[in-house]
Image 1 (cartoon, rainbow, N blue to C red):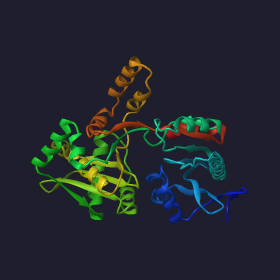
Image 2 (image 1 turned 180 degrees about the vertical axis):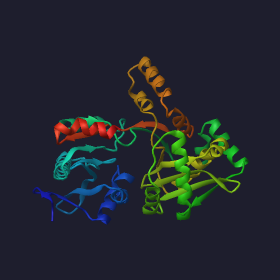
Image 3 (image 1 turned 45 degrees about the horizontal axis):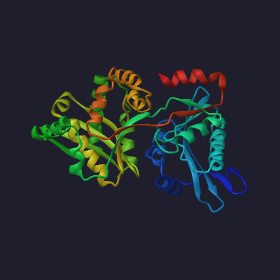
Image 4 (image 1 turned 90 degrees about the vertical axis):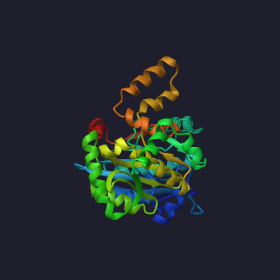
Length: 356
């Protein structure tokens, strides 16, 4: 039964198998729009809705996985790395209308869309203009807006040859110092979580619960991989990485001081890159660098570029950037998020709470 219909189009809630086929086949399909991501978030307090526009032949044309978080009687509605739009603006308008209806029924203060389109994509400018014409306002993305994407089309030796000289040396040093990498399983997740706790405390960032990491690893098997780096039989670093139909994704990692000094993270990243390549991924997404680096691509002149570079160098994540950029790849930047304000008087308050 369609939720909404026109003469040739209908808005429906597709079943999981149909949705997965759509996401996998869409040119912008990604991990955060897969049903597994919805299942993960549903287990930790989010409501999940999947909406799609179909034609009169039942073909899915556009869709979005919408997450809803409710607190104090109101909600925030959000499409992570979505929606997955079509080239037909009529189809896209119907999808936005449906998402707005679901968000309003959930008493959402706002609906946030986060299209997975890079700023340098051919359709980026027209999509941005169209979003504004729909009454949406630009907003900060929840997922990292700037990242580094490493193309995986080359042979492994060519990929490694493009790494920085220092990174190649660190990989060799890790191997020389006896760091061994193995694939972990369910029994290793407790040790991984302990390493994440220590890393979060040292670096000052928040982490998820052990149950969250365990669920993420389990739900996406076999396209999730826990890579463990051990030295003298002791865990010193670990990466929990994922693969969707196009990209490998570097989402979670931790290391202790021994692992950092031995270059264990560099060796793990090299293993993760090769795993993603073997899984058929087109690129490896290092998942987040200081946004000033992404903004440099649109800098109008040398002075603006220099100012952005100075801002980036002062960012606490500059070390993270150097680690990720040393593997090659290019800095990319996504379009902004777009908000439809649904309860105006509460919007600014909701944004302040979201930014905390």
